[in-house]
Length: 258
Image (cartoon, rainbow, N blue to C red; front, side):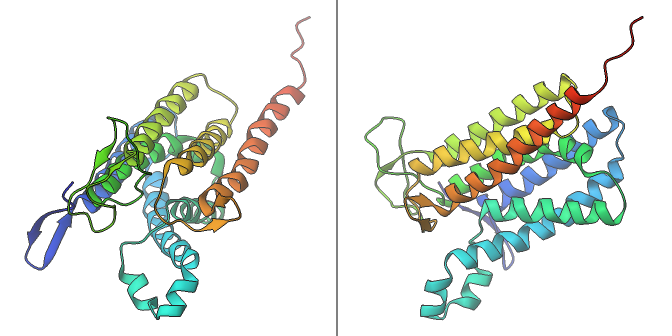
C-alpha cells in the first residue's frame, strides 16, 4: 500500500487522511438522512458532530501519549508525539461521546435519541477509517502462512516483506457488519438507548477479539492489551444500558383491555 497519494504544494495527501475524511463525510450524510426520518434536528447532529470530532481528536492524541508516556519521557519525545500520526481509536470514541454528552446537556437536549441515531454512522466511519490504516500500515496483524495474509512493501510502520494477518480489513468488515446490524435493529423500533447500547456491546466484543490478531505495540496490562482492558470497561455500561432499557419497558403498567 502507498500511503502518500499526491502533494499539493507543501501539503501531502495521504491515504490514511483521505479515508478518515471520507468516513467523516459519509457519517454526516447518513446521520442527516436518518435524522429527518426519525424526527430529530439535523442541525443538532452537525453541531454535535463537529464538536465531537474536535473532542475525539484531542482525546485520541492524549490516549496515545498516555499509552507511550514512559518511552516519551525517557527519550524526550513529547513534541514529536504531539505532531506524529499516533492516535488511539478508543480514545477518540470516548472523547467524542463525552463531548456530545456535554454539549447536549448544556443545550438541555436528550442524549440517548441522538446517540441511537449516530451509532450506525459512527460504525461506518470507523469501517472506512480502518481502510486508512491499511494505507498507512498501522494496526497491523501477526505473521501468518495463510494465503489471505497481506505483505507490505515500503511501509514505515508495518513489517515489510512478511505475510501478515489483514487485521485492518477484518476490523473494517466488522464495523460494516455492526453498521448493518444497527440499522436493522433500529427499524424494529427498540427502546430508546438500546441501539446505542448494542453498538457499545458489539464494538467492545469485536475489538477485544481482533486484539489477539494484532502485533503492533498497543501497551499491555498483564495478559491483556490496553485496548482489551478498555473493551471490558466500556462493555459494562453497554450491557447495563441495554438491560436498563429492557427493565424500564417491562416495568410499564399493562394497558387496560376491559
